[in-house]
Length: 323
Image (cartoon, rainbow, N blue to C red; front, side):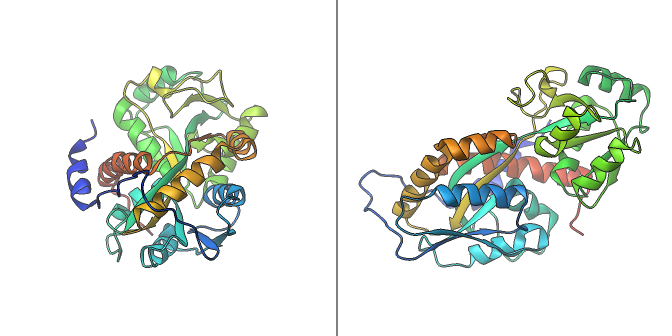
């Protein structure tokens, strides 16, 4: 059971969200808006940022995506934490940058809760547990039975120590009372390559990365980490059906510097929600295996609170540290 006492220090750190009063004075940007991404172009965070930025056409100013890469996304996050809270600089964040990193990097010069104001929960995504076809299991229940009969003999690949793939697997181990042999890679692609080659037994993979190999039959899907089935894999059940209490989601959201005025938060939250609802953005996100949300500032704050506590416990449990 994850210790939810982690919520208490988080709430003590969190600045009160500005009231989203309808009477707040209107706000309009007077120069281009920056969406800062702490990762390289072409990744999931960058792709999502560009989809939303291109759809934000009603603000009267262009929205430009700026990649500030390094330190697991911390360079981009710190830049925004230090920016003026005037509505012209935002960070496109993930569960990694705005929950996990606080515990992976003990010497961060900023705090992912105290120094940011949530704006919008853009999307939620899950992973899928996939195995090499030679492994004699065809369901999560069979995987649990096999793992218990062969403790420590199943090799699981991840995209690296401290990655969401590692934590998805660690949470599964805890909930199912099994143990895997964790083999970290430098990225999800080489881990998937070794799974296909039969040098690994399983991976908890982002759906977008696993889908081509599921379709080709090179890997076998057993369950998804979300509580509901994924539209792209309607025949694959949630892991929680066989392992009660298991749920692991990733997300992408948008944050502003702390002390950003309420009218700016209100304007940007509404504009982002409208952008995510446009057919072009919604359909593209669904095709990538994401669940478009376009949620409010309160939705983003609630998701961050939950995962801050979860990641604190998983980092402690796994002993993960940033390289």
